[in-house]
Image (cartoon, rainbow, N blue to C red; front, side, top):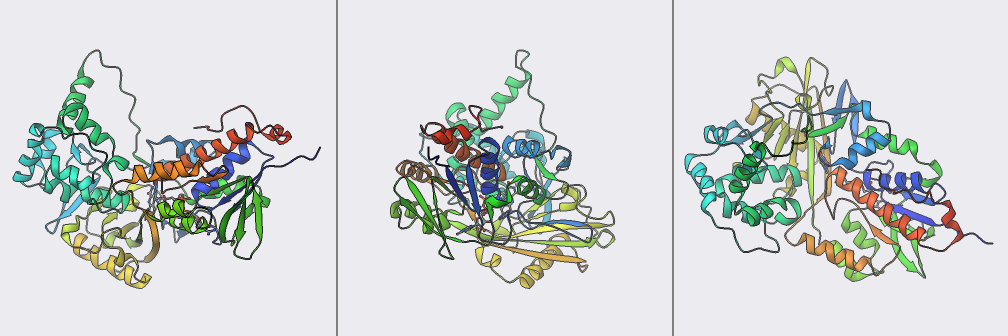
Amino acid sequence: MNQHTNKVAIIGGGITGLSIAFYLQQHAPHLDVTLIESSSCFGGKIASTHEQGFVIEGGPDSFLAQKKSALELCHTLGLDDQLIGSNTAKHPTYVWCNSKLHPMPEGMMLMAPTMVLPFLRSSLISWPGKIRMGLELFIPRSAPRQDESLAGFVRRRLGSELLDKIAAPLMAGIYAADPETLSLHSTFPMFPQMEQKYGGLLRSMIRQKFARKSPTAPAQPAKPRSTFITLRGGLQQLVDALFAQLKPASLLLDHRVTSVTPEGQQHRVTLADKRTLLVDHVVLATPAYVSASLLQTTDSTLAAHLRNIRYVSTATVSLAFKRADIHHPLDGLGFVVPFSENRGITACTWTSQKFPGRAPSDSVLIRVFIGGARAEHLAEQDEATLIELAQHELRVTMGIDAQPILARAYRWHKSTPQYNVGHRERVAEIDRILQLHPGLHLAGAAYHGAGIPDCIQSGVNVAQSILESLRSQPTASNTSLNAPQPVCVL
Ligand SMILES: Cc1cc2nc3c(=O)[nH]c(=O)nc-3n(C[C@H](O)[C@H](O)[C@H](O)COP(=O)(O)OP(=O)(O)OC[C@H]3O[C@@H](n4cnc5c(N)ncnc54)[C@H](O)[C@@H]3O)c2cc1C
């Protein structure tokens, strides 16, 4: 009998593509998987370097501990002893406002205060701003909405000052986003749910506090020690560990895919050098606008929806200094900058305070963020200009006059997908159209979450769906699948 070996092509060797290849190899070792990456290295936005005793992250520096997929992947790869958590300082974050760094009030749950006294004592919010925030208790819940912008929601419930000084800069830090267009329902669905269920955020916080104090309340699960987790050698360690596990024959570097077209029940993947692969399943783990161009001839409607997911450019600059040259106490993890302050950076991380082992003991490492939805043009400048801008901003905000002993800039052109109002519906439509193309899959940051754990989970979900579809095929090749354990080890 002529056995058909099922073939899978994964396009894009960032953390999403690597995770898919790894899970498929683990659970279906005889499957013919090819991971195709256009650049000369795997990892995509993950880019850690080691220089002069510093660990510098050009892209992401950590992942959220709360979402388990990244931690589970590290565990499967035997990296448990390499995991490190962020410093759990009492005042982790500051806000640059009126020419001063103010501590973020303790107990903020993103944009909503969970503790009254620290909020009332805060120097960041004016008394009218505090009173306006307190009035949230008396604002009736709005009629349920399909979606609204984060800015619209915060302004409506908590007031403009809280939006400007806390919610917006935090969102700029997390999503590089403009809060006026950022979808509340795709990013923080718990907030409209709190409004609908309890009549408001403050009411919800009060109810939860009382519920926790009740003697019949179930024991709270132990809180994770740190919010953010990384690896001793930087996030590149995760990429390297995945790479080490993958069969070399399944990996293609420096190969750009130019199109994906259906051919009978299969898909033909064409590379820039005109070579082609005919595969049973193809996963596009590329940015949505790249996926759009690859699928243009296959389904122009799908391509149009993908192209409608906006991406914005960002940049990071890491500067290292001798500790003795910095007069600031660095008593936290860094600061965010409200847009209204009209500065050239959106946030600053005191990297060597956030994670141990990022700098030699006599030095500090500081990283600033530039660009995002409201200032993309700044991120598109050349590297020397970005470094100059970062130095200028640190002089103004932290009084750092010293010359850095090391300076590195990373430009991320059209790097960050924007979950704008209507995102959920747009992605639901993309998922619906995908059903019409069996064997075609999309994964990555553009759809159901943009953080590293979300990307890994989206990869696991796609791998699982490929394995399920292969298992349901009545072919001899099914014997090569490790059945019937679930692919998800999360
Ligand atoms: C500056 C910055 C800081 C961030 N900080 C954090 C953080 O601290 N924590 C966190 O959880 N997330 C963070 N993120 C988000 C996170 O890094 C990304 O969402 C995630 O790494 C995306 O992974 P991916 O594999 O889906 O995509 P990518 O990493 O973009 O990988 C896609 C790959 O596809 C390749 N490719 C593109 N076109 C083609 C083609 N035609 N053919 C073949 N290959 C192609 C690309 O070269 C790339 O390697 C940050 C992002 C940025 C930019």
